[in-house]
Length: 167
Image (tube, rainbow, N blue to C red):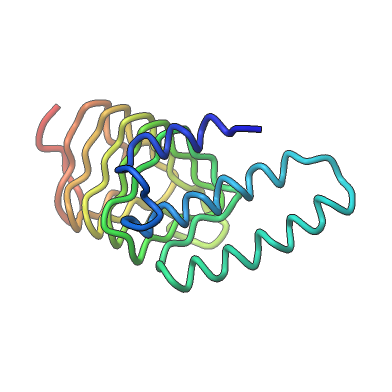
């Protein structure tokens, strides 16, 4: 059964991405894990879960991308320049978002709230989005920015801590 979210991810990559873009490996394993969770309980699900965890650890080690299957990600995720990307297990990411190398999306304190990225958000290299904040639709986060407060839709945020420079 085809996965429309995964098909939307693939549409944002060049032809035959498995030979050109290692980031697609992490996205593929993430989407596989989400499909495993939708299966009905039983032996096949148990076997698929074991396969998922093996694939997850191998791809995480090879690519430096950690996207747990509990993360909610809309269709059309694109990761440019793989490596050092860490996403907390409770994060929500909308459709058609772009992540670049070194991105961290997570909480500020243990068991604290996590960010929500709406649709069409772009995060620059080594950007960090931390805490219970919302990054609005179409927002852009500059490279190496540390976002600690909400970013309105369509805005651009840069700096440490990030500040809004345009809407």
